[in-house]
Length: 327
Image (tube, rainbow, N blue to C red; front, side, top):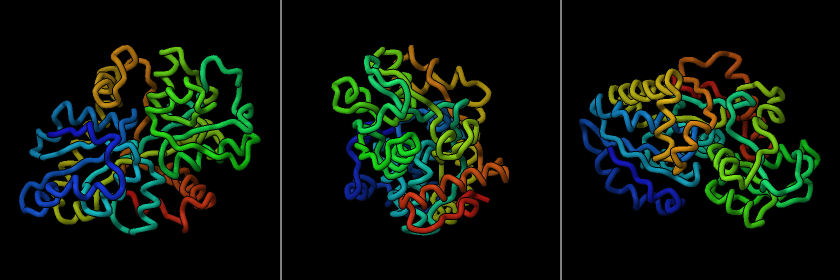
């Protein structure tokens, strides 16, 4: 098992092919192919981190390489191009939908991460010294989000529902959010964990409101927002069905371990998200739903999110969620 952390800020569209050329040769061979897993260095990818560190993939004879990406869209494009075989949790479900619009039929969702006001992930944060008390106070202010159309669309829509229509969102990598707030480059950030916890512990930022997608987009603070998903390439599923089943089983072990032993699982956040040991026990964790655990209610909320993305112009057509989930 290999992990490429140096690529976190280096891989962009147009360069991915050269980086993975050797992997393509490996996957062209019969037998046991190399499985490249793209992931964003955020908290929801914890099942992947744990499965890597506990050797779950290695135990079933899989040759995997985990590669961190700053922009989740690059992971999706890598899957479409055949250069990435799997996406870890935390890859934006919206980016997967964009991939489905642009090149249908290239992936299947195997697990989605859930957040809301109970399982906190997304939030608006501001500098600790600022005078802002609620999202509506941000009207006319400079706000950033993470990279990718999903983050930008959500930030704009939530601000609009709080009296700030047509906000111009500044897209920044998540690791730039706290420095940008501290320097005054921006006034607020729509961000994901662990950024909110890091800023709070460092006493540099504070949270205005968390669980904002469930509250303002889905209409219920406890509604499950399936904002990120792990997925497998359909080509990989077709070409190597037995290997794919081994991968899914190993990934499920990671999910189950996070569910049953979160305090043990948290230790792996330090290595993959670059937070220190003090923070690992304080960062909130999302919940997870495997492909065979989705209820009709879950699918309805997931579909509501995709319909929102279509209404916002992120998706040029309606994308049906159910066919994208592995059956």
